[in-house]
Length: 238
Image (cartoon, rainbow, N blue to C red; front, side):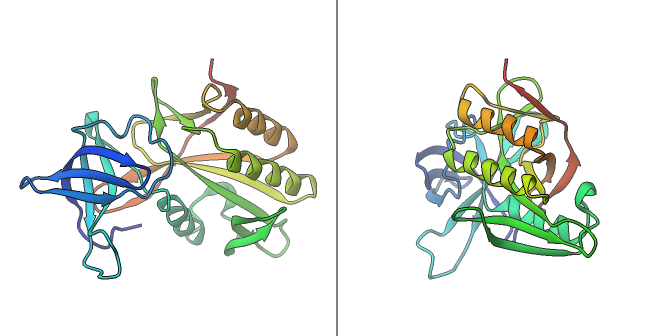
């Protein structure tokens, strides 16, 4: 997924609500940017962080700037836009670049399933069981090279795991794909201290046959694309 407009560097002043942030451009101008992330963004909202904004001239938009990336120590990056993972995964599925799902030729987004949900992707292929795929954005890192999910309580996420479990019990393939939208992690675990209910739902879903996949991203100022697969640790954080 390529950014349609070249990104502009800035320094974060503050994220003052879930969807708005204040930043200083390199010339000294202070601007308000849309923050396309309703989560806690733990560790990614420190004042003074170097961030990258996407400008736009669309008169229909209230804000001229959108926050897209955070620069991290050691030359690493994190994406903050929670809409990006589905775009990245869609491109990868179309290109058959996700190994365990590469046999599927038809990719349908936003298909109704469960009680009142839409699965991110339904994959079909003659002769194969349908594959129901949910995608979760991950950008929490607290210790070592562990990526962790979630970064705050997510009842919706636990519901998705339960709905995938029901599909697996019915004989379909059910897949939870965690996309780590930062470049300094090498493995994934559940943040059981932040959301014990989600960690328990994860364990129950895996026991029911839900496949747990994880990929990192390749991130730079021009694009976010699918990176290598990462191992998923099923155990809660110690």
